[in-house]
Image (tube, rainbow, N blue to C red):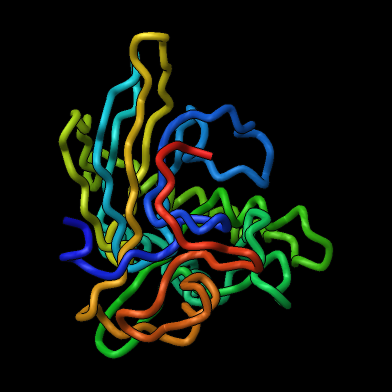
Length: 245
């Protein structure tokens, strides 16, 4: 079903074409941890592909609420409230690679949050990755204005005016454009009888929008429509795992 929407790309350094979204015991306080592998809340963000698809298999004991927000609406709200911060968000921000580093690349990369290109506004956001990048030598310190921008974007994305919530039930499918929609997840708990588990696809449709060169680093080294997206490092082997790892 997923391949009808686009080409599947790697979810992680291991080359998983289908990602398992469940708590596998990783430490959410470790800046190198990707939060999908924990039970901690995931703040609003988008992923390293054109499209993200989720299929809910099972629910946990409690929590795990999904939320979505139009990133274009967030842009409009920032522009109206703080045009100075809107300008700052069109400049490069430093992202952490969370240890998934392509050959010959540094552990971070830089790209703007708000990207105007070929008649489209494309938005890329993850405050968790901006803050994690601060651990690396040589990365410029976030200024008070950067921290204001982080607080404002996160607050707007989570606001009642812009946020849509849904508890995905077994069999439900989420399909989102990472260029126009942020997504988030509340913290959850599991029990021996009920363990939260979703499957994830990152997809590259053949008819998606053009993107600027600034997206090359986050999209696996390419901005070619239909060929971009995903995480590839030395030793990555594309495959579909039957269990999380």
